[in-house]
Length: 325
Image 1 (cartoon, helix red, strand yellow):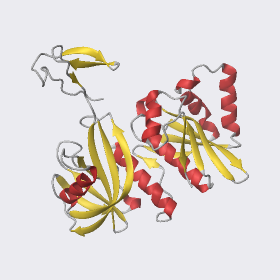
Image 2 (cartoon, rainbow, N blue to C red):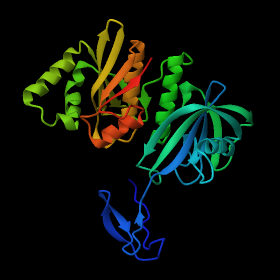
Image 3 (cartoon, helix red, strand yellow):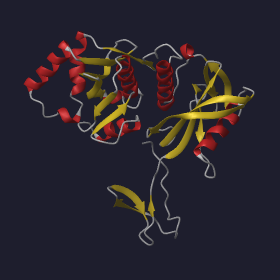
Image 4 (cartoon, one colour):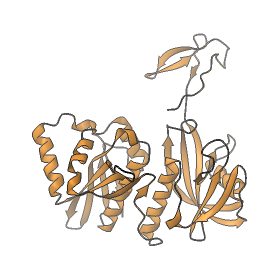
């Protein structure tokens, strides 16, 4: 989490605050009246506006990522609902009146900027107004799906990737591109075995594996008779595998299931949307095979990995799942 301002005095009684462990964390507290200063994420809202077959993006002004293209987004005022904030932000930044169609996703951004937060994304369609840059936007325009520019915010990229996937499933678009800012998602090759095994060492539940078990894992990767592996690879030289997901296929007499037990992203690349892109690739593959459920074993992962899985839409359980059809 990015540094946040720390108050000196209690807002309730004016006494100087002192650090104390509350709820397993060190927090500023008042020794006189018992006030506890909690640092909570700020709620925000984002909107993917569909128009003329494409997506409305704004070129940001202001102090954060100025000059970059992004979805309409902003903070929620204290006296308005999330939906009201979404509609207001669209009008202020693009001049468009919109109708909210559905909820696109909810993502957290503990990394900022500028402070940690939670953002709720909606899908919307334009119903009136005139497209023009407003508020602190430098420009606004409609981008077709195959010409979307790089976006600086991980959560915006995740929302767009989810929209592309949903459109592809509905037949509105060709299959969504498996790319991100600085990386691509592709099906694994035999030569990726060493990189995938290295990444497997990052999974908390694998720390007790024996040498024989590691060799067996490598052999299963090479054979992959009922396992599909996708890897994330950097696009700049020297290209390297920085993440992977393994999808095991279980076929029944009446359908099929997908099972994800192994997934990892290199430590230095976490928070860049790679995990979400890998899950999207697995989900698209499951849909192509007409699987009915996608199960994910999150019990073996770290608390951060479990939180990511739940933020991605999986059920809050040791064995999480997405019902596909």
